Image (cartoon, rainbow, N blue to C red):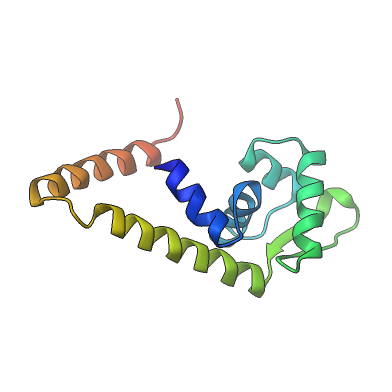
Length: 125
């Protein structure tokens, strides 16, 4: 499923680390460079390069603070729009993939989705 969704993303020109970082910024709000790097599981220098590339494309805006540690990165309107369109493409692709599911299969998927949601909402132990 991840490979199929990656194909949908790539066809829309928005994939990989860019899409992941933009998702954090759109759905979690503005982040410091350190927060964004931690959310993505990368080191700050790696995230700094990614942010610079996103900024050059007009997908993020960087609000400077007193020094590099206090910058805030937020999705630009263009970046937000691009991410939401990518999400819509993913949802449409999933709907097409699941369209042939039987009622029993849909009920089973509902149970799995509820379990996953519950599992992901629990704090890590």
